[in-house]
Length: 438
Image 1 (tube, rainbow, N blue to C red):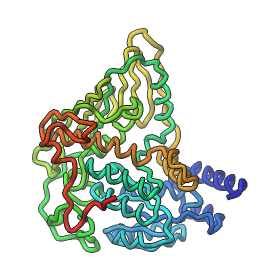
Image 2 (image 1 turned 180 degrees about the vertical axis):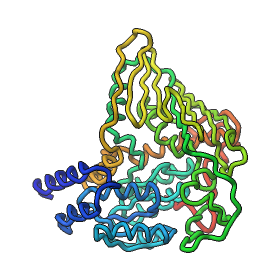
Image 3 (image 1 turned 135 degrees about the horizontal axis):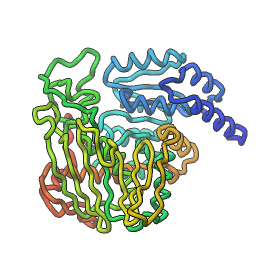
Image 4 (image 1 turned 90 degrees about the vertical axis):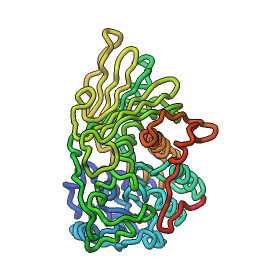
């Protein structure tokens, strides 16, 4: 690629991103920018799971001129039809699939976004790498510790770019806050808190099983999960509240917020973990995962406390989500809106509120494409190894909750000292599926 070509791509990308979020950006403008890119410079994209974050990721990455959306896949044809109609606004035509394996057989596709429910991430990421695709996989990358290990092994074997969708890492103010944290001005940090108080996540009333909606390939939606009758509560967004498919708020928001705790503290896996909570707010609700949870992690040189609650918005420091690095000299409070430093008495100067500037998701997808082109995977903002690290920490919290035990991790043996807990390191696959051996 020539120097002038690189300049054009950079300038075009900045022009599109500067126009604002894609939800308010005409598809026609996207198509016009892409029409200037030669066929040889295009990076062909296929998307697996186009409802929710899968589509948000697609809209973000499509702002990059050289990315060409070639195919979309979803088990719900109703969602496919909705996306096809939306894409027609920009005269963007795509091939559609309901079976992701057929999409991966398309040799013209270079990169894949995986935006499916959590229980599918591992299989689809490994299959995509084996098919020669670079992958952007949504968080949490794995639905078990064993899956996380398998995904790391697959990336190494197939030598593909794999970015985890933890886009907070690319938010400019998160980077600034981390730089301040590592300056040492806070003094020794002994405790870090992270929390998600999600007032908008209300009760899910229990519903009876029902026939599968027309246009939905329910067997493909279940995949490796246990065979169960269709229930509206388990489908689309609410899948995250059922153990068959996900890990509740711990793995939904926890992977974002705990990730920055681990990154800021340069923390390995914890020495011990203890989780306590339950369905306190909505005991008769339709969800399985706890709506209230407090989890304490001991890393040897600091303690992390994770809290989550559905139906409550008034979290720590008056924020519904965030993290607080509590040092001897002051406390750095960080969330998606911005960050500030609250001094302890007169031991340091306060840092006034620093608001967020820029789209973390846009920067994250751009970082992925940069690595795809350069093949310098160490430049990924959140490679699969990092995504797997925080996913494991979150899974440890859920395992403690399920067993009701204080758990101790043996890093040499890669398992817990408590044998009961080791039964939860992996997840049983059903319906003829198995984690590929890599």
